[in-house]
Image (cartoon, rainbow, N blue to C red):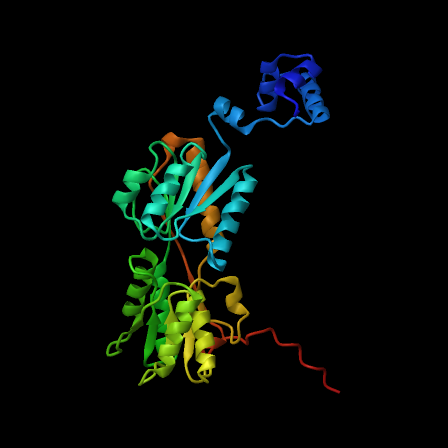
Length: 342
């Protein structure tokens, strides 16, 4: 049988209450007594019960992260940023996905209640009314890329509109006349903002060329096949995220088209793989991991002082990264130094 707190108290010659205070880091335990308790716990291989501790401290030392999906490099980077900040604060991370479905999001919110000290909620398809009705009352929460302001909750958003507008203007300035856009899921705030930025970036007289998308590689590949067969064919493609751009790149190659000679290609997010495809992908750099870290830091502060939780909104800046896929920019890979002259 595993050792209990009573076993530790008996071995250390103290009360159960003293063991509990020592294990929870209380200041009212003498250093020598605390060390004796810790030594006894180590000898008995005693592991404190997290559930019992949370009953005393009213804290679980766990943060919940609800994301629309867990697939792909974007969410991997986001979770990495959240996890790094959580570990630095001694917090655990509980991650769940809504799969882009409002009912699943509501169920996940209910499941998290009582298990976590605070919530990070990334739900580009949820509106203010939905979140107001479903966020557990009194539980600190920070919103990520929801595109809404909810009183009492901090929020972090990416400059999706500005980034998309910058990319479209860059392609137009490079001489591209027919710039196609592969959009994201219907009802998704980020997708809507990137579409709006694309439209705002087109020059006067340029025609919109829009293909439906859903942020997946498969959808980018399907759109790429249609683009390759279009007449007249676009001379540039701007995909609303890098995953679709990479899928489109594969389809264009299968159709015998060269990127960027026959058609320029660009994405959005700057996921790690974007620089390693051939040709390397021109994209809008989003500080994905930093976004997760900033959101977790804000949530940790709200958990520590719930009464001071403010509803401020932070816009994360983005940056144009020019690589070979649009016909301009640095080589896809670092070039070796020139051989010395003889």
